[in-house]
Image 1 (tube, rainbow, N blue to C red):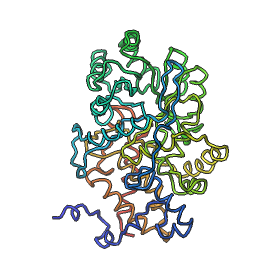
Image 2 (cartoon, rainbow, N blue to C red):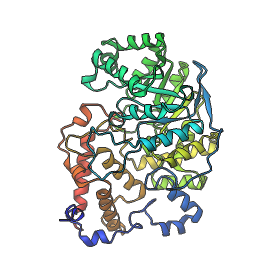
Image 3 (tube, one colour):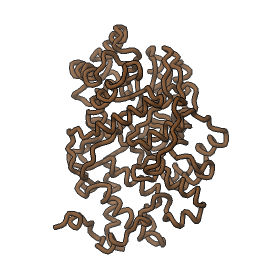
Image 4 (cartoon, rainbow, N blue to C red):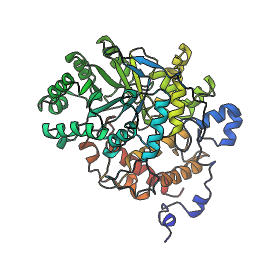
Length: 487
């Protein structure tokens, strides 16, 4: 039997699939391209469609090549050491992968596209980017290797490299395992010193004690700093607000990384979510004179493709600006921020981000009020699953592509293809678009209905965003199954 036919969801006929056009699976906003153009005007519509709604979700029109300035990228001086850090840092968590058929990649396979990674790194360095941030756990464990290969082709004084002691999993927390991870980073990155080294993903007293104090690893890292193999020692935070304040005052840190974006600014976004209130964290670190690095300024791409009603406010303010550029300007607008890390999978991502920071244009009061007012109101009203595609929950032993399931769900909500009201005129169209889009994005054998609630996705390595993954999988599975029943 033909694979596509064999994968046809129950309750949806062949005619239903044939009847779904590109205008049904809408790029932005619950209306098709033609009607959207009529509503907001051709220029604004094209800008909105191109911002975060291309095939790669990159925040600018697919395939667009911009006039990217040379030599104008903003840099900030690290007050601890005088380093001139590019305000745009290259996060090596979401690297390009070799083209493959859905579902064929094995969990432990290095399917990173080294040639594409080299091209991105070369372009970034040529345009002034000098901060590259990786970790042993990124990209199924292959990010450091790929980063090392790409950067080793450049003089060592052209870049600052950051990596982490990612001993989150129980089997990695012993001193022996942690030391092995530390030394392997040097080998994989092909360096004899690391510019910025993180105590990775700390969130509460208990975990910090087990992972860094009881095994003596924090003392070891401080000795390595004294020896010059670590130039700067800091920490990245996902966790309890009280612990953040404690840790800021407990040690003489060289820097700290926090999650900061306009959606996290001053907000508590849900039950069990403790990685919140970036404003409070920024103020505490600033008071303690700790330079700040920013992660998730675009929330794993979520703010590059926000809800279409939020996007409408941005288009009215500046029809030419991508949604991602608004998020990056917000994150880079604070004086104690030394670098803003962005995962840039495609050249379009990199070019748009370089343009945004070449140089950075400070937000006006009205622009900041728009992001923290109208835009945030829409985003909080239409809450997504706050997944940033970090892949910490992967691999699932039952083959579920957890981040991609969440990504399709969020994308459907943001684009207006979220079928809820069965009495509405657009329900059938949205239903078709949601189901077909799901099967196009995620192989049926890797969808939410495969979840058996084993909870390994959160037990092996806690979700940095504190998402209850099994609960969300159950909810999405039930929602999808309800849609598969003919209306």
